[in-house]
Image 1: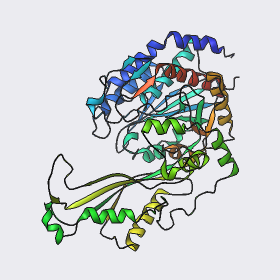
Image 2: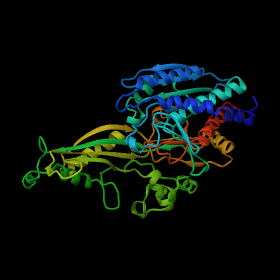
Image 3: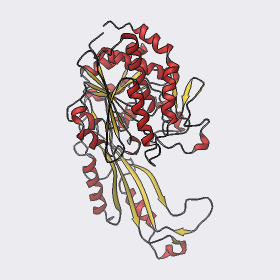
Image 4: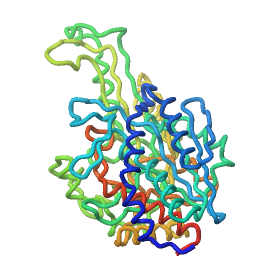
Length: 454
């Protein structure tokens, strides 16, 4: 089958409002996994939308929220997979939104709504690409498998159960994971072939059964100070992690790992301005900054809570203190092993009173940069955008690539034309209309090329 790209691209352009309307239906349905609001309703909507597009849907119950597999057959024996999630982050603080977060709003060339970028836009773009290809050519060039979960925003705790129980139904010749973007201001596509892993823990110190009058601080230990001291033992002044064995087993960087950073799409100056920073950690810049961002593990304090945090004065001695930490891990580091190292470190330094609870753990993963799938992705990105894509061998964030890919070494990537710095997880989350339409074209082109066509 010859791929007349302008023909299908023109069809997508002509029907973009239809595809935006579908995205609007997804946005309108709340799906907050953290408080389990609208999850079953969102699952039912996902099933309707997939079946309407001709996909055969398998509902996959887990101990938590249901996962879904949608299959549609194509002409070749190749299978293209799409991983996305139908749950979203909370919308608070609501007063900072300029429009209803549960109603898709279009203004200034942008689509606004909770989940529009992360990640209901991906679901809508895949369905639109399937629709456009079927309408123009009658049948898909390859089979497509959509794999959807409903707990990504709370750590994908039941994804290992799903990928193990249904592993015989999950094989693909390549998988696109949520999160593919272009560079800033319409720059080239960024193809990301791997990701850091993550260990997320809670640490708690309890010294009394309740908060007390702060006059007792003269004779009663303060749990906040105790926890601060424990946290301070984890890192030195140069931000190096001091947990014994933390860096053991990390795969050494190759010359290719460092060389690829020279074409990295991360906007150093733009991100600094976006975040309102005067400088980066340790005044890093250039290749050194990019090397740390992509390849160096972290130990981050994500939150700290103790005592009185409201407006005004309340002189109390806290009864307990709690901190949450996330460790971004690289290949060679196992989340459960790092957890044991954290506990051993606290014991060694006399902090046995600090309770440690694991909240989630996901391994790092890196796909083969020289795979056929990676080459097809590069060709697709160049055809759709007219620009050579940039490559990231390892994203600084975490997604569950390893659960789908590691056992069978399935090639995978985060790739597409999404909007960078799109207020993901924040008020006024947005997706540029032109980028949403380009992402549909990207997915349609990728299907064609994976099916063996040029």
